[in-house]
Length: 170
Image (tube, rainbow, N blue to C red; front, side, top):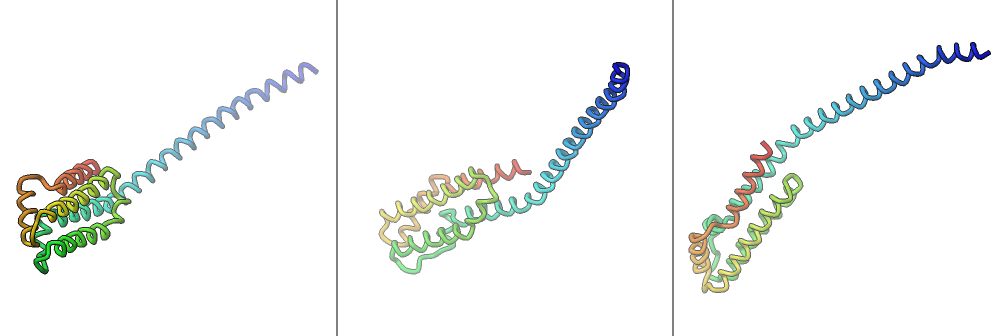
């Protein structure tokens, strides 16, 4: 009886060991194939999303260019001599541009969005600050142009940040 038991173990043991070895090999193979497939899908996803991200950065760079204080003053002329009316026209234009590009934030980094939002806020605050010491719409324009001839507009900082982000993407 013991002989038959030992003989059974002699047949079963190699089969069990072979089964475990085969299981672990196939399991490892399947995990390796799954990891490769995930990497392929991730690479394809990045390839597909890159044009969308670049377009978002382009639109936000254009936004920064359009709200650049010097350029916006040249593009938008005062409708009257009232400085407050002109200030509201400028701020309304900036806010409209911002709202038009608001959805782009989902395609860019949080740091870039923060830089763009900070540039927008800084431009609006500076316009309000200069408007307080101005007498007319034309005076407001001149004072803003004089102020920004002495310093770099905040939009340039945001543009530099955007360009840096795009370089990282490419």
